[in-house]
Picture 1 (cartoon, each protein chain N blue to C red):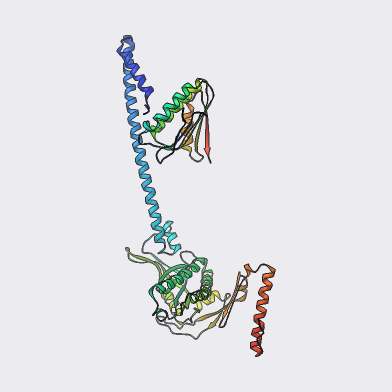
Picture 2 (tube, each protein chain N blue to C red):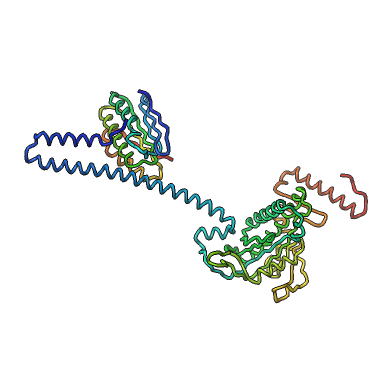
Amino acid sequence: MDNIKIERTERTPEVNFDFSRNTFVLRGESYPENVPKFYGDPIKQLQEHLNNLEDGQVSFDFDLVYFNSTSAKVIINLFETLDAAAERGLDVTINWHYDADDDNSAELGEEFGEDLESANFKLCPRD
Amino acid sequence: MSLELFEDEEQIIESSRAILASNTLNDAAREPFAALLKSFEKLFKTTRRMMRLSDRNEHNLMEVSKSLDEKNAMLERLSHQLSKYLSPQVYATIFSGQRQVTLNTERKKLTVFFSDIKDFTATTDDMEPEDLTFLINDYLTEMTRIALKYGATIDKYIGDAILIFFGDPESRGVQEDAQACVRMALEMQRHMADLRTKWSEMGYARPFHMRVGINTGYCNVGNFGSNERMDYTIIGGEVNLAARLEGVSDADGITLSYETYALVKDLVVVERGEPLTVKGIHRQITPYKVVDILADVENSGRFFRQEKDGMRLFLDFDRLTEQSRRLEAIETMKRALERLNCRVDGGEIPSP
């Protein structure tokens, strides 16, 4: 599967999905005009890739400064997808990056992380 | 490819509808199951609506926030430009909210500085407007820089004249304010000598000579004018007196009133002038012309400056820290003394 690299814009985050190394990154701001269209291809491919993986390590970095409500739903769905992959036996780690002085973002990450049953979750404050 | 954000929820609804349609539920379960599905469908629809609404609101908020940022940046630029029309201290007190922009004045003891260029009209009569603009701006820029260094409140420029005061909005005490004013005036006059050298080198045949008058006394300070257009300024007889003292001052000179002299007598050497009657002042005024700054005051600083007719001496002690440089300076001054002594004694002038 070809890696996916989408540069960030004012409204959309950088998408860096490295399928050969199983490292996945969303970085920047997320409030696309059309959220399902923007995330459609990368997430479908990610789901397909994870379904085909039998074992190994997977890391997903959420490094988002701002995201709107629909993007939040995408993130929740991604958490569920990753948790399901971990339940199947993959070693999945989710890294939640946030500004050290941004309590809201830290709290939101914690809330998202609470629902995980199998994947590892790490809060990563930015300096 | 588009992502179906609520795929799971829609699948649950579809399969639940299929169960209801298949009549596999018994009568007791059918009714509450149908009610539960209806409620879930309603909740699901509401969630989608709320999410769209939330996105729209967030988008609007972002737009408002951006627009506010732009307006703030514009206001900041404007206020920065407007600040050039005000004295920095006055600007700071207004923008920090300490001072109300209303027609209010108060009485304070201030030291008032008034200066102008001697024979300005005659000096600049045949000058091209561009040259005049350069000279006046260069002069005012340099004088302003020195004034701000000493914490002065620059009231206004009136053509070639400058009105400055000490003691409002900030005061370090009446005596300290007066001393700061006189120190500032001395530095201005010293710097004028440097500026004249520069201007001469640039080809200006008749460079400016400044006259200064300084007085200390009670003035009315505050906003004068109308609610539509006001000036933060000072008025009163003591301001007039500073202007009159400037009028009787020599070119390159600083003339003090007795009130100011009494506050700075440890700082300067003065020459007491003959009492004068000046326009608009009932009492006779004794001018005190500053002839020198006291050596111990001068020696305490970084620089040593003396300027007399036919002599200019300037030492920057911070640049004479190396022994070799100090010796070189001493040698130079010795040679100058030898030549000077020969002149005084009427002897031959030794070659350099």
